[in-house]
Image (cartoon, rainbow, N blue to C red):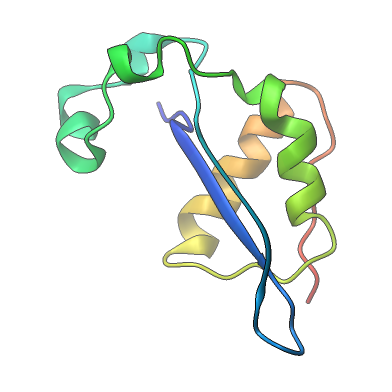
Length: 101
């Protein structure tokens, strides 16, 4: 299984290419056992690091506000990030943000 352990986004003005806002946080998964030794080696995040972090449900309104109706860009975003964001919103029975374009 997968869990979002960290979320970060930068909102950029498309005309001036300047940063308007940013948001970054660790995220505590509902099941800490999803943090495997392999994922810890890959991203450096362990169960202790996220034990006091907010849950995805806690940050969902901020994530939605940052992402909905905007252009999303990132490394491996279609195969990984978009899927994980949609899955995380489905897990809390909320409508996921939709990218523009």
